[in-house]
Length: 112
Length: 116
Image (tube, rainbow over all chains, first blue to last red; front, side, top):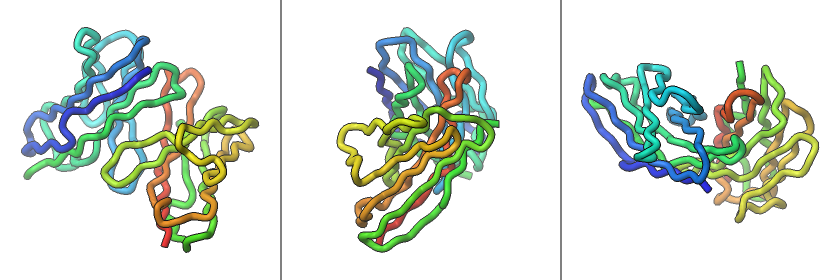
């Protein structure tokens, strides 16, 4: 079985500051890991994903995440926050592609 | 590529009526589609997995007679909320899988259902 824990339901950063959103997962098999962003009243947009290979994954809008098997983590980072980054972020894990398990989400606020 | 649409984007209905939500894969064939429900400020909860040409598989606690799912073609799945009540008000999101895309799911824009 798989599960995801996102530490911090709300994160606030100043514009231009580092963004760090935490995600830890549990999986009995090698996982596929995803980060999605959701803007109000919209669906989910894929930011990045880890399947196999390089553990540092780069995504859209300057985001990246590193898969650390030893820490069972897949934290999302961005060096410099922009106002347009304010949104809800979801980490998800799957083993089969059928059952996706989502974290409870982290709301990112960017302070001007 | 791999675009998923939903229709309608918003619907308001009276209690007791039924509402149908469509989920379409626009530029690919999806043998499997998924329906999620999202309450305000909460995560997505999988309601059911829809396979083309067969009965949907519902998650525990989801009433199959209330949330009817039909996957009649490789590009269309529908969710019908029957005899809707205010507690069914929610954001419904569908997704579709694409073979060969490393277990990725592509999400629709969602449908906001409000039951008065």
